[in-house]
Image 1 (cartoon, rainbow, N blue to C red):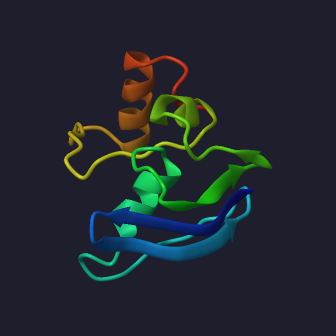
Image 2: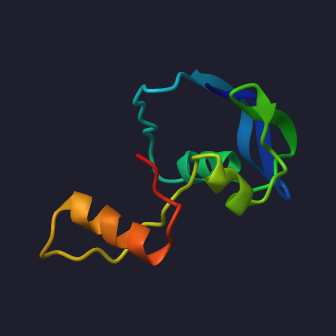
Length: 110
């Protein structure tokens, strides 16, 4: 289970996330929606270790992961991609994932 407890992120005077708490059970699918500037990317950056929390904690299966570098969090199965991904349009989504696994063995689990 992924659990966020009272997560907040500030960038100078800007409050990007304010007191976010949520739980995501293993094997479930969720979506995060909202207008530009609502904090969606900041939320994912917090979960994946890209952004430092101003307050709050993030736990994965009972272990605290906030403050860990992104590569350590990725090894635990949580990673993100960026919107400028370069996919191979001539192959399936699965083949794109398998190609990525070939490039970085051990990253994709299944």
